[in-house]
Image (cartoon, rainbow, N blue to C red; front, side, top):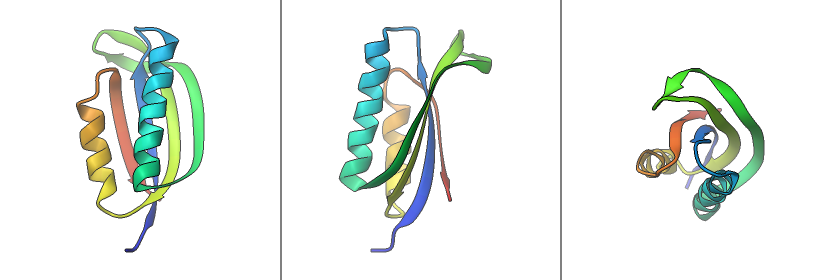
Length: 94
């Protein structure tokens, strides 16, 4: 199966404790590892959002570079959209 390189930018809610952000990061890291390989994880930390999302002015940014099959990004996005604590996610092909 052919693989491609992707970049996922995730913004998590900081409304709850820092442990929840760590748990979400670990959850998505595990999901990627089951379906591909992680090249790099870059935690940007808490940043001000350009505009409030769900009445939250700040978000915790995590950037993940990974390699996977062409079907995985759609599944990754689906899981992220139904996960509590995820404000935004965007996956781009490198």
